[in-house]
View 1 (spheres, rainbow, N blue to C red):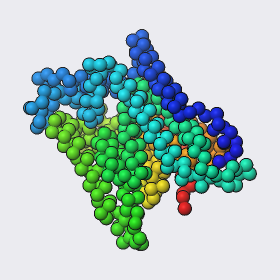
View 2 (tube, one colour):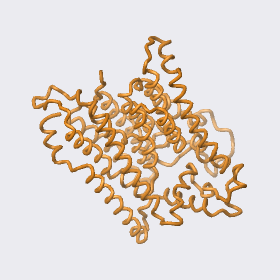
View 3 (cartoon, rainbow, N blue to C red):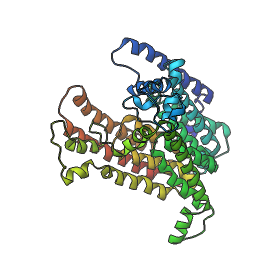
View 4 (cartoon, rainbow, N blue to C red):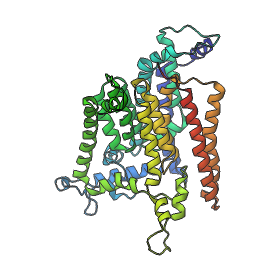
Length: 454
């Protein structure tokens, strides 16, 4: 760390003040949303939040046409969240938002904002106790004004506060949670999983990984990196046999069994109460989903061109159309990259943050559906990853400019389609390709800047 960096960090407020400011911003926006929604046609509250609230209302108010359908439903006077069209989440979310009905409609927003704050606390704890102490020996020594590395707890806390504030005071983060998106709950689960993994408390981490995967299916990809780290601890074999011994052994089997058992136990419990609609809407829908509506993913255009319309006669589509519509078209490259990067980089616990970041980044970029809130899945790890990156300020700004610029380029074209009604599907698809190429360049730069510990 340079002397200039130390000088800048002296002006960083205490972590308690950052938490207080972050909480005030979120509470103010939640209060503002109540006024705004009451006075404006264009609502501040996300439409998904209304779906969550309706689902919670259906759970609390069963009727003959609204009842849970699982084997245990006959013993419970409970409704089904899936009575609400487009509710495609775990029933636990609807149950968690039950106070929306009997306490206040904004309870869920406050809960999501609280999850943001708790996530910040976990980030701070990880930075101060594990990540920054390990990153200090890797400070660049080529700078002429390098300050001798010391166990300066105060400067470590200031740097941790600065990094966490980049997340807590990020407009994208606090806007999404205060509008009523549940992404902050999953972010908290994922960070808690990482926290206990870095603390080598693998049983707790396995339980949290099972819970995270139940909440939303994509966190299962982190299990690959975890298995690599667990298996590499104490593994002395080499070659192909040593590799398989590191992947399949008593420790990795235990971790996999615990996380799988947690996932299955939650799934069985949900199925026992809510039945087949739970499986169909929470999991199977996402595997077979064909979304022809415009989004950042360039796959949308392929689906749009082959999507059956109301006037299309019912017939067996041509093979090329079947291939374009098939989930495997996006699923195979996406899983190859996400799981492969987990195997490649998930060899040491010190690299776990980096491995999860890369896995999530490629998962989002190559997902068949991609919206702005998906970016939170990987930006969540940036405050924990930055201390291990060595890049110039100019290059950092270049990566940020490309990341933001590709989104702005796409959004400018999407505006013509969504608000002006212009037929710009092809142009939007081209900009989607630019988005993929630009993001891959940014990821490659971050990977190149990563300081791999010796």
